[in-house]
Length: 231
Image (cartoon, rainbow, N blue to C red; front, side, top):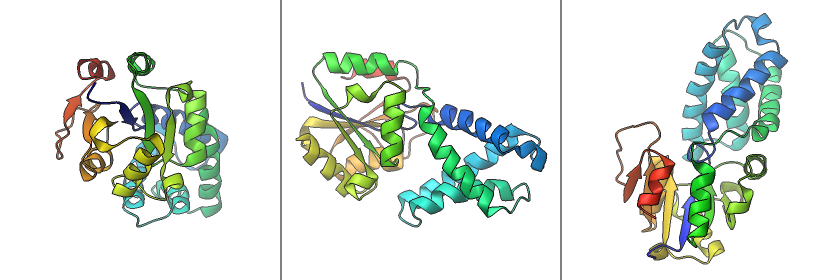
């Protein structure tokens, strides 16, 4: 086999972050009685949260803000869109969100099947994720995915973020891998695919959303089952 080590991204690639985040925010919407505070549509609130979350994650991955700011300001800004300027509520929602999110277990179709397939073929599977250390391990455990991966490399452990070379080099060192016998699989062109390019590693773009890629991966798939045609 050309590849011995497969490095996966977790959120939005295997673990369905959008579905799990939405379910968690529905819990918070009820818990904090947001409808009584003037937010009469959960879907509208979720749309505003998603808008701010995406932009804050972009700033976080580029090193402009820290974890804590990302965690509570996505709540703060979403609430502000409904004229609710309540910092204590925003901070409490941030805590509640991270406590509840890892217990949601929605994964993309064919996630378990492809991980079993790749394991049976003799690949060593690992994760490289910009997610938070404790949260990511809880997600894996509650989704029943923890047993598939030899190494789980987070930005906290590596002290770096995708697409920086350092996190990929750290991951390969931990796994006993080199770029030539490794491949990165992820949904984020700027983090996963560009990061692989930065260290000379092949990559597979998991294009769940059917977007037009602005960075060229070695391969591209629209469904996880299609990985069987490559690996």
